[in-house]
Length: 412
Image 1 (cartoon, rainbow, N blue to C red):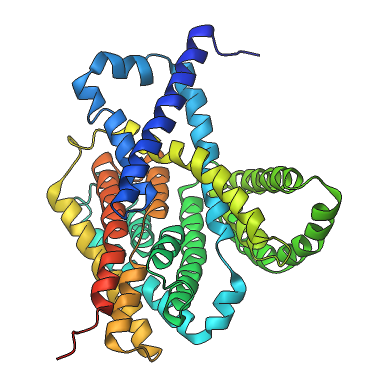
Image 2 (image 1 turned 180 degrees about the horizontal axis):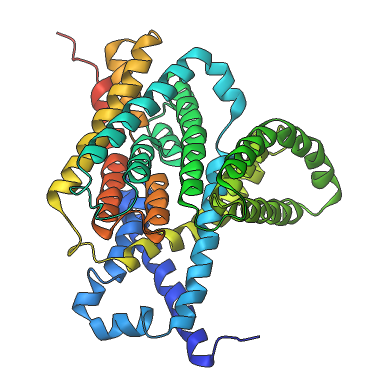
């Protein structure tokens, strides 16, 4: 069995130290400006990557991130694990009973907030594929991906924005969160089917993969959730707390991630569904959730977001018109769709606009989608950069636009 050489171990440790330190520094700066930590972490990656460090001190950048292929391979494995854990905690934030409690409003907002941007994201790239960077490949598959990328809302970012604005426990806050939850589940299911069509690594036929994916989703949201609800009290009582819960949760997260990877629909989907099933249990305390969140959000998530900037030169791959079109499609589709859904549910115009702005936050989800598509050769580097910029812009503007929509006119 091969192992890392002495120099490769040093190189890997230096990579991890540089990534975590820079992520923390830039996350703190971002939060000082009332921005999500993820914005700072992505910027940290751009600074450490070929965009800035690679230009200022190319020799040092090469030594740190390019001189040891074995260390880079080990780092890639750690980053893959970070993505899986990130989707696991995103799933933990999905509370199915909250979705059901909001009923028709959540369905209207989530479905219309999914359909409108999906149609825009599908139709425009389908008729102008070369503008979006599709030189060769399946145009239908490419357009399906673009529709999905335009339609998923970043639930963790939405929750953070609503908490910062003291709107999380309000009726409007609850309906936005519920809409984002439904949006996420449907969006990830669609993307899993797209990955099945790509046929990259599945062990089953396409029809079998799609069928098992649907059955697995239904099982995890019904019987699987019920089974976890029965087992958790025993875990809390018999095993050391919180160590037993933490180790078993992550073990089963990896197990189900391995299952969906074997299916050919990517490991992140199994991790996400397990998070949904576990997070909705009555016996998973808020304190336990917080411990899991802190462990993953402050160690593994920053490694993933910093790694984004290490892969691509954002200056040389920045296409102004492509970025502008992607941002317009993302804003128009999500705000019109979700806002119209809120209007149909009886919300006044200003609150409906605020719902649309709230649902427009993209953040981590689009970046993860884009990275998987880039690694599988479905999109090029320019489109990936455009998707990252779109995710940053929507995350940074969602809160201020909600405040603008809900502002009260001064008394005259």
